[in-house]
Amino acid sequence: MPRCHGGLSVTANCVPACLACNGHKSDADAFDWYRQQRFYDPRRAMAIRAWMDGDLRLAVRLLQWATPELAAATQQAPTEQGPAGLIWQAA
Image (cartoon, rainbow, N blue to C red):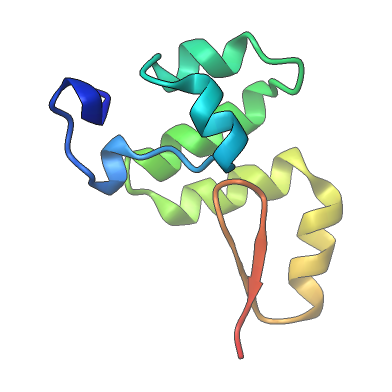
């Protein structure tokens, strides 16, 4: 449920999105909005759903499956991949 309709600011109710996409999405359901975008990828949608459900390990594995080039990068250095496909390297 969007925050503007009383939803909470918790992981299960937050969507990883850039500022522009978040503004464009507004109070629409994240998955309804995402399916209408030219960059929609059902594999990434599954990863986002896993992240929202709190299953971070599954989200990372799904992103590695969706983007093999990122999977190769994660094998080179100890990193953690976020739900938007971004890679954070441990310092």
